[in-house]
Amino acid sequence: MPKGTIYYVKIAVTGGAGFIGSNLVLRLLNDGHYVTIIDNFSTGRIENLGDDLHHPRLVINRIDLTDGDATCKTLTDVDVVYHLAANADVRDGWKHPRKDHEQNIMATHNVLEAMRLNSIPRIVFSSTGSVYGETKVVPTPENAPFPIQTSLYGASKLAAEALIQAYVEGGLVTATIFRFVSILGPRYSHGHITDFMRQLLRNPDELMVLGDGSQTKSYLHVNDCVDALVNHLVSRDKMCTYNLGVDHTITVHDSIGWITAEMGLTPTLKFSGGNQGWIGDNPLIHLDIAAIRKSGWEPKYSIKESVIETTRWILANRWVLEPKA
Ligand SMILES: NC(=O)c1ccc[n+]([C@@H]2O[C@H](COP(=O)([O-])OP(=O)(O)OC[C@H]3O[C@@H](n4cnc5c(N)ncnc54)[C@H](O)[C@@H]3O)[C@@H](O)[C@H]2O)c1
Image (cartoon, rainbow, N blue to C red; front, side, top):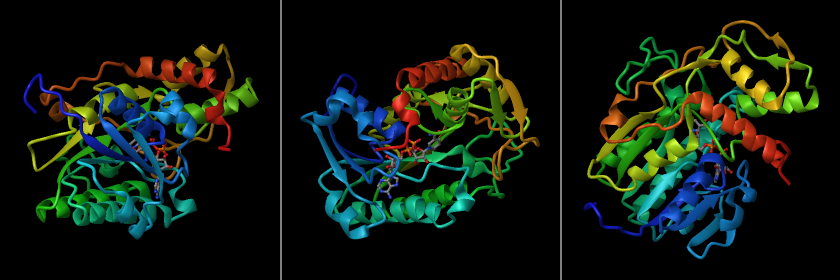
């Protein structure tokens, strides 16, 4: 895009009612674009859209992407698809082994087919650092070998990436794939902070921690994530894959310290033990972000700032901890 020229683009955001999707939708509307949300509201919430729910440039379609016909009829007349809809729950994969296959692989296939049949030229996809499984290379660059998959979620995202690559090689779409670390910030709805805060609001004196607390993780603020996504609304490249994260890590212990301090609590900690929180929990996640940096993107928030802001946001928006209406 020539510098200084603003193009307003017609964009579909699948999963636009979810945590990251809603942050992206609000940003795209703010930037002047026309946005269509496609979401089945399985985990997405109407509350996430706040005052923009009735925005004149926003259309919301309640569609399940596992329904290929409905997807094809709905995903039309846009220039770019941000495909974020997915089962984003890594931990409970083995409780419902078909879910990752259906929501992450089949749904991606249906999105790509709708794009082919409706001549939509570009997809931006939310993948995950979980695709690296048990990699031995840390910090992990995009071209690290990652032969061992440790979760159905990671495996299904890797399969979705492969499908996208095949459509790119077939000359049907161009693609940018982002492999995120865990994301924090406003409208955060699932992950270790909600788990801890739910427990602490029920019983401020005790906190049960999965693993031994030494798991080392990297987190990114959703505003930084959205910055990267919108930077790649258009691209001259046929296909690019970027890690998204920060260049430092924290332990679960660090995070507990910041969350409990924000809540003004000093609970007794109990640990389930072992260096993994659950089967497939990578005890060390740290992605190499040199490639995305070269494209001009830089994270603005430290992990500590992200954890504290997320804790404050949840304390002020406790509806996010309640079951959906
Ligand atoms: N949150 C993270 O830390 C994180 C990390 C890495 C990757 N990701 C990826 O980013 C994306 C967004 O994650 P999130 O944290 O916002 O999750 P989320 O659960 O808040 O959002 C997912 C959205 O997709 C919708 N959805 C799910 N299945 C659907 C289907 N079959 N048809 C239509 N809509 C459907 C849900 O209703 C929800 O609105 C996901 O693809 C996830 O795998 C998230």
